[in-house]
Amino acid sequence: MDEKKKHISYIGLGSNLDDRFSYLQKAVEFIEQSSLCRIVKISSVYETKPYGIKDQGNFLNGVLAIETEFELHPLLDFLKGIEQQLGRRKREKWDCREIDLDILFYDNLVFSDERVTVPHPYIAERDFVLVPLCEIAPGFFHPKLQKSICDIVLQENEQYVINIFSSPNSLKETYGVAK
Ligand code: A4P
Ligand code: MG
Picture 1 (cartoon, helix red, strand yellow):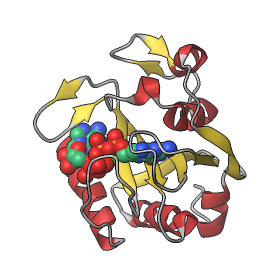
Picture 2: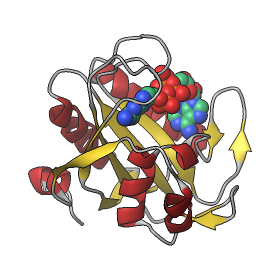
Picture 3: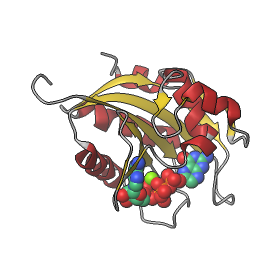
Picture 4: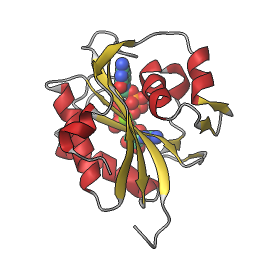
């Protein structure tokens, strides 16, 4: 990773089907195996109540910080490819899913086209994203809202996070991906 420009991106992970923790673990493993990504930080995994469509099982959610040489659209393609390899099936928006990988932030970029929007548009109303983000990047400045993650967490009201499902870095410990 010497010549190309490196970017910092925060990736949200979610699963509420089958062996949820195993989907998160495998997604982390795929990301780590890419020569264009280096995992910098991993949050705890949280058990969370479903947002959107309420009549579905609880989610496991977590967040990664990665350093990557992928430009934005190739990063999206890479993550969508992992979802496919892990067997994600197509369902309704906000419905249950084997694995969901969302780009929360990409450097300080504010950008939207028909394929991708960064920052991810719903961050401020989702404690299941904000709480793990706060764990690994409390001072990160949301480039559109112009507030730190910590400040956004303090404003946020509806609660989806139930508890910590596994301790900080449990995903990392499993695969020994710390660098
Ligand atoms: N897309 C645009 N911007 C982005 C981005 N920043 N990151 C596009 C990733 N994808 C982005 O996504 C649909 C399209 O969004 C992609 O093709 C991409 O081009 P998808 O993952 O295929 O579909 P989706 O997940 O059903 O839609 P979406 O909008 O990503 O759903 P969300 O917002 O991820 O919500 N409750 C709890 N507790 N925890 C959860 O994780 N997740 C959802 C899904 C609902 N309820 C939840 C959770
Ligand atoms: Mg998604």
